[in-house]
Image (tube, rainbow, N blue to C red; front, side):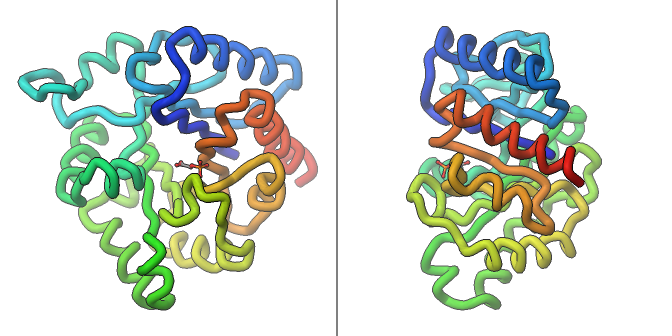
Length: 237
Ligand code: PGA
């Protein structure tokens, strides 16, 4: 399974190194072979050798150039980073990235062979508008995206569930993941208020190939426990 930590705008460079080291030690001690991804803040990116894959939370669709405040692929390359998160709800709804911008970013990093974790998900008012409206909204987030790309991972994260402690019911997650699997065979993660207390049951659901964890992942022990849940599930299959 794929267990990903989105550290957002948290943890300094030193704290991030300590965090990643804790996870590496845990993976080694417990003999864990799940795919573990960590997305640190930009200035905490660094070269890393180990089982954990480090990814960027964002980068501009460029190698370099005049894009004040952005980083490009040269900067990721410096640290050997080949994984990127695209379309996270905070990029879409807080920063204001449009589907067009995301498509450009997606295509740029796809051409370079990056592993792309592409996020989708609906805001509350769309969910409340009913199932059809919700699927219509989510379908638009697939527009222009190569759903057959071999290094693609999709993360379904309802906007209203991110950082709020709210989650869809387990039945809802199964239903929507089933629909989303019809759109792409890429591994499909669930994200939005996943924590130690609900991770095991979410991971066990049909159509869930992993989780993308924000707030709860900031606690390294909690994140490790979630990784262990995934390992246990695979071992017991
Ligand atoms: P959360 O965030 O776990 O804090 O809800 C998830 C995410 O934003 O990826």
